[in-house]
Image (cartoon, rainbow, N blue to C red; front, side, top):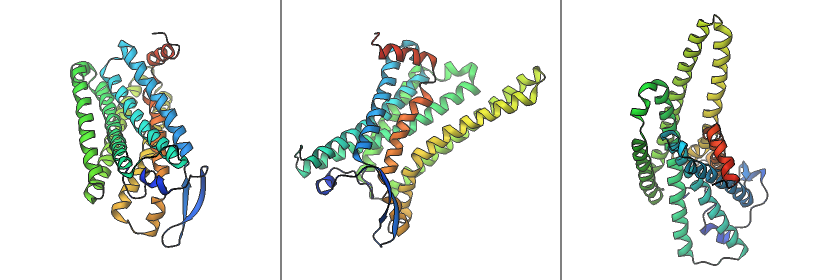
Length: 317
C-alpha cells in the first residue's frame, strides 16, 4: 500500500537489507525516543500469504464444484474467499519479488518496478475494500434470512446477488485506483477510515439485533417447556460469546490498519504516532491473518461445504 510507514514497497527493496526473524524490540524514531516495534520477516509474510492463498482457493473451488452451494449466501462467501485470496496473492507476489531483488536473482529497472508496485497496490487495495464489503453483505444476508424468513427467497435472489457482487467489484476497483492515485490527500484517508467504521457499525448493529431476536425466540421456546431461565441464559451466553469472537476478530485484524490511516491524518509528525507507523507491516500481517480466519468463520462451519471439500482434496471430480 502506498501509505506513509509502509516498508514493503518494491522500490524500497533496492536499498533495503533483509529483515531478521520476527522479534519484538525497541527502535528509535526520528526524535530519538524509543519505540516498541514488531519486526515481521519476509519469510513470515510469505508463509501467511501462502496458507491464506491455499485455504481460500479451496473454498472457491469447493463452492464452484457443488451446485447445492450455488445460492446467494454462498455466492457472497465465495466472493469473500476470492477477495481474501487476492489480498494474500498480491502480498505473496510482492514478497517474492522483494526476496528475488534482495538476493540479486531478479534485475529490473526502477520504472518497471514502479509500474508493478502500482498494480500490486491497486489489487491489494481493491481486494481489501471488496473483502470488507462482502463481510457486510454476508451480515445483511443473514439479517434478512432471520427477520424476513418467509420472504427471503423472493428478496435475496441469485440474480440480485450477482448484481450486488458485480457492483461491489466494480466499485472496489474504481475507488482503489483513485485511492492509490491520490493516496497523499487527507480526504482519501478519511474516506477509507469512514468506510471501515461504517462496515464495523453495520455488522455490529445487525449481529446484535440478530442475537436479540434469537434470544427472544429461545425464551419463547423455554416458556413452552417451563424452563425459562436455564435455556435463555445458556443460549444468550453462547450467542454473546460467538458475537464477541466474530466482531472481536474483525476489529483486531482490521482496526490497527485503519488506526494507522487515522493517525496519518491526525498526527503525521508526532513522535508517538511515528512509533505506531513503524509497525505497518504488523498491521498488514493481521489483515492476512484475517484472510486465514474468514473461511473458518463463514465457510467451514457448513457440513455440506466440508463434505464437498473432502471430495476436492481427494480429487473426486
